[in-house]
Length: 205
Image (cartoon, rainbow, N blue to C red; front, side):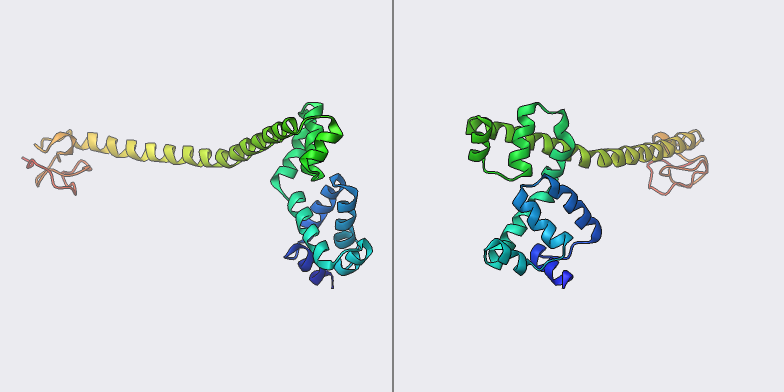
């Protein structure tokens, strides 16, 4: 019963960790949205019964549930929860009403005594900070991996160049550092014996 109810509400079954996280975030939702999530995911009530209590069709309750889930599980929601304490009071208020509680811009503007344009600018700034944080979170592991790859590549190339320089000290007449010390055609990156693998232009003497 609980599994089928969760699938109907969320489109998939949430694992226990996700449910705990969801119920924790529900504390920041509007009262009606919080009660909806708690009724389904904490109390285990069927969505149809919750819809009857709300006086709406089950399909309407399901759409509302999906909207609330999408907002509460979003990375923007999580970003606001973790970053808002460092923001100016007005920005925190806009984030709480618009992002966490999902209120329309017009309602947020009226409640805070701001213009809708000001609210939109604050939301644009919040989203820009969220996007920048997300990019840094993604790029840091990539940058570290790239640095490791570059180090490995540099060591490998340096090792091969060193071998080539040592090979070029023989008496062969191969081109540049490729000459071998023994007979045969000039080698590639030789190993000091004149037995290089690439075709050279000079012959060993």
